[in-house]
Length: 235
Image 1: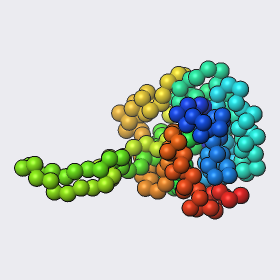
Image 2 (image 1 turned 180 degrees about the vertical axis):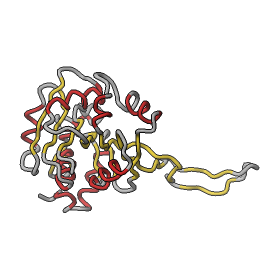
Image 3 (image 1 turned 30 degrees about the horizontal axis):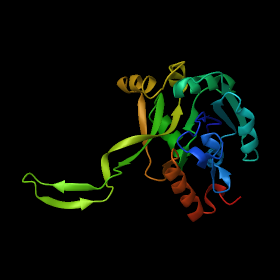
Image 4 (image 1 turned 135 degrees about the vertical axis):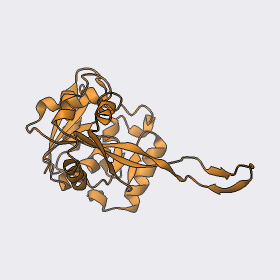
């Protein structure tokens, strides 16, 4: 069982504007709880006891206060300056109590990934890192056309034959040691591990909502409202 997780929560919610209510993006309210509270609930269900929150300077106390009582110890790590996602993870590892595998998540996602199954898949494949991937869906409708330019039909926002990372990982010691001090691990560490056949994917076809804009926030709010007991949403 993986006992620790690192959550990237340095987002400033600039694109959310007034909808953020002046909060860091990971603490924006979805229903009655901060966005990150749903991730913490998911992590606790998987056996996580310590959630290390990589956040902006001066924001640590807000995370401890807003995430109290969720069943895990919240340990904020304030970046002295923006280090990028990979640099933020690396910097946060300084307060880990364990070695070995750690869950790592982007703090602005609403997901229902089976974290225990993700960890099992990671270990079964002996990967240095395992990333959760979700099907790519077109945000536009598709027109099917044949070789003679005859229109065959229309598909509204179809699923495309590709997968995208949803920002939920298990990272082992080797991957952690190879993270950049500054920059994004998905453009540095992960491509290198992939070239060495040390990076694996865990396919997830369930919930994935990234909260970047007021429209995204509205979709997240609608999901929680339609599922009032999902991950303790009503508590």
